[in-house]
Amino acid sequence: MGKADIDARTIGGPFLFHVGKVDDEKFAVPHAYADHSTGLEQYVLVDRSAGSVHMGAGICRLAPAGCTSSRVHAYEKGIYLLSGELEVQRDAEAFRLTADDYAFVPYGTPHALRNTSNEPARWFEMSAPQPKPPGGWEDTLFLGAADWPAQVGRPDLEDPCTRFLGRFKGQKPMIRDAAGVRGLKVHRFMERDFGVQHFFMMRGELAVGGVRGRHDHAVEEIYYVIEGEADIEMEGTRYPIGPGDYAWTGVGTCHAFFQKGETPFRWIETQAPQFPEQHASRNYAAWEKLRARVRHSGSK
Image (cartoon, rainbow, N blue to C red; front, top):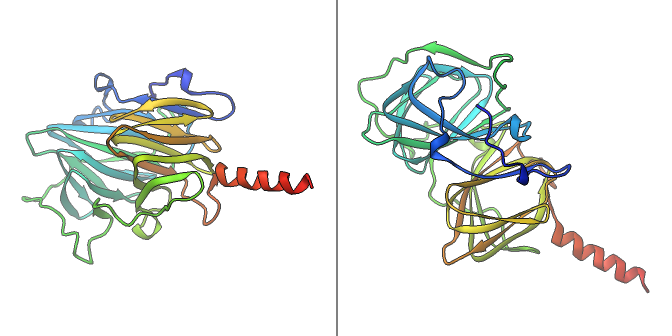
């Protein structure tokens, strides 16, 4: 991961947050990959330079005929393909991903990438624990050129032996309307049952007129916008966001979403570390109702 492009106006007080837009002119070869890849570039969304301590996240792209050496990481990694086709060799298997496919690379697992299509491949990538910054202990070990099979096909996602792979089809949403929440769906697809230990990855959607009221978390989150528009409120200030924009919230940062326009607001979201079993979100609307009730009863 390289240094994030930080707009200081979006980082304030003791609560850290970051709102930005992916700039196609600022993609660069990731640190340490210059001699171990061809056609690979990345735009860093968040790393330690942006205030994060738990995650590294970015948008990656691989040019036609591009490839990487095989390597292992001392962290977990999740990939969600946004466009194009991406071939992945992971341990002894190789498979081809297309848009809306996702793949998990467990800690210490050899893997390589290549693009044999005529179009660039583009994906969202999440790593946790947070990759080490350049100049310190190296948490990526390159193993040399990958030995690809003659043919690489689509994975059989119905095969019960297929692991750490999936395709987003609008899984059962986790969140229902409640105090301060209207029209929100969250579809978590990388979690403990999937084999991930250090982070969650999900898709979110706010319906037209939808609201996710003010709240904070015991974890860090990042949101990458796929479709639609919304205002995201960070510590009392609203920022308009749309496709290609992203927002990161540190632990304890108050934030909220307010959908805008005629199109549902949709995004990719990750959280690190994983949520605790209970009380990972503090929903301010519910607490304000309790506060008002306590004040009312105390005035009698």
